Length: 398
Image (tube, rainbow, N blue to C red; front, side, top):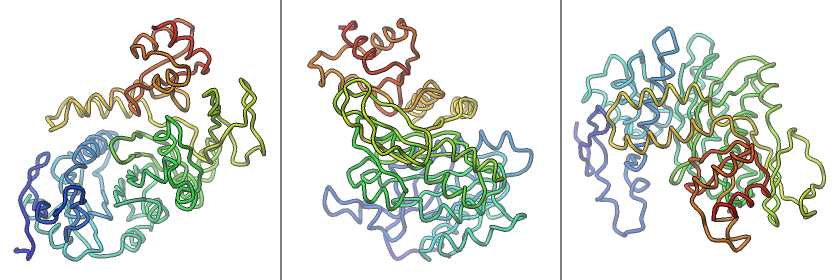
């Protein structure tokens, strides 16, 4: 099949796929070529797709039947084709895109990789496509929502199309609203207020989980995060959806607010959807700012992280070292408290030199608190120690 625009064959993972030749659509250095091409393809998201393959394989090993997988915003189909080829337990991959050119390219890539019996493509609006699979016996085991921007418009139809105990994956690339640059946009889309703090990327992930929790609760479903992270220009979430009003109530009880003092860097959490009218910092008496409502529970499940790490160890991927480091950091900080401290921010606040991260972590642990590095920031420490103790540990590490 020929296309009347420039294309090329690329290799990703174990597949070969036809994609738009992005160089032909970039006339200036700052232009974002994927958005200009006739069919969407972003090579910069290869690691995102690599981890999706690992996570789906880890999930598939725990499911006693063949997986039925959906990608409602498939673009050129590279992710869905990789699922069909690289994940052992996949029985069917249903891809969809509203762009008819994209569907033609998906069908070409299905044939190119010899997975005609496993993979299919439809040309519909994503919500309409997902709504076709809302009935009990036709739902998916796994749905991957990876849009250009926010996944929020697809949450309701996605959770309805997912079986009980199924896994949903969400990508959010609109980090400016989620990180507090455009707080009104975050309120509109995600139903929560962000804050421009040193841990704003964690707030972004928690806002994303919170929006999923509230969307699922409307359909009497609960949410259990399996793996969540933020890298580069996006945040990513994998979560189990469990049916039942009790499950929904349990998830809502994990929602609340993060309170932050911009004066002394103290922070705390407030469980509950109904906020107090005023918060004062217990350390310095300043009025504290609030982020939320958002998810206050664990961001990742340690067992699922471990399973994903084992899958990564058994494969040769282009960015294997980076993926292993990312997953190991996520696993190491799982179970930790909400928010983290950055050494740079503390040192800048108190006019101190920046000490080695490992030394500060050791000092905090010697004081009887938990401490671990975080994947969100290379100078960050996730700890249950108060800001006063973290400052002392920094000073003692100099």
